[in-house]
Image (cartoon, rainbow, N blue to C red; front, side):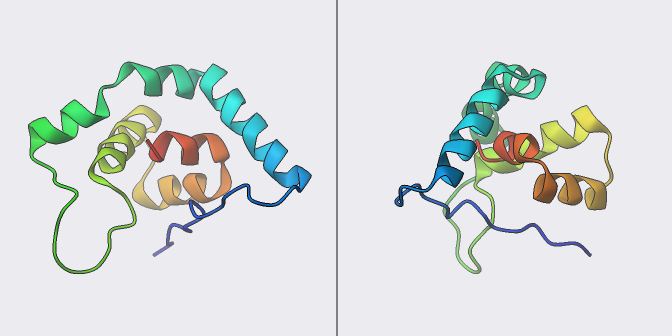
Length: 101
């Protein structure tokens, strides 16, 4: 099964232009249809209502409880299979931005 690549550790600590491009993607996400859809959902309240907790023992989760709700919404919105969703999250920064609430 395809695995989700963890790129959320990128921090613009160096003065390279690649980080400027990342900021442009973030801005374009906020202006996109996915960005507008993301802003409509109260992911925090939804996670709390469902009873998802960020605290748990065991292996570290890739996604927080908010991000898990965002993934469920994104999967329902796109109609992708699990594999397709993973491929799109790994290859599309707008999908990645939606998942990383």
